[in-house]
Image (cartoon, rainbow, N blue to C red; front, side):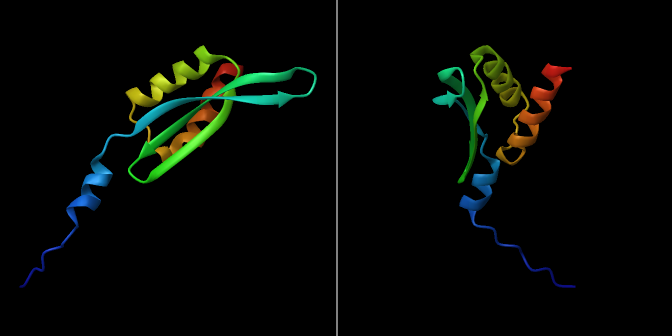
Length: 93
């Protein structure tokens, strides 16, 4: 029986082994009746993949608490939208 070695470029493997980088985002948003307000969001980068949710809340401490949870649990960028949705739902109940 012959086995052929699987050749994986080392840089490809290193990319998937990197820890994600988490970033707090701030921007300005026009809201009817309230004018311009500062909103906070989160970006997660892992290798070449960056996912952003730019308008999570106007409350910085709410977004920072979520950012800390994401970092503690090494959340992948691919799951950011679902996690934000679940987190905000949990705050409403």
